[in-house]
Image (cartoon, rainbow, N blue to C red; front, side):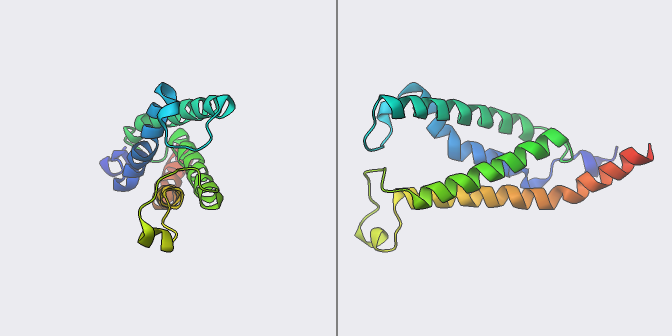
Amino acid sequence: MSQAIQARHPISVIFLLHIALDVPMAIQGLWSPLGLPFLQLNNTTIVFIKLYAALVAGTCIASLLCFSLPVEFLPGKRALAIALCIYHVTCSTILFNAPRIIPYSFGALAESYRATPENVWGTLHGIVGLGFAVWWQATVQIAAVMAQIQKAQ
């Protein structure tokens, strides 16, 4: 196998961006969900935050493992990437349509432009989701070449 095919694509850094965006929520949600700056926390929401944090921690670990893989054509890496793309785009949509759940503000000027913590968080999720879609498209040729090589063998 050639070095070009074995090398990690530079845009694979998107897996690390997923970790950077979601690991704070995973850690805080597992260890101290009451410390999160959310409104109206009750026993039910705390349990759901812990469940969500456990899920996010698992995806962060999977992302770290996938990032370290040197090849972009592995089905598991591609499957995780598309799953994380769907996750981030869905989170983005949910956060853009959510009522105010974080009792902080970036100031009156930011509020006048609808730059609330929920919208900023949603924007970051949207950027990471778009990043996974770009990674998918940027590496699809590698996957296609590898499929041809495997058929030829």
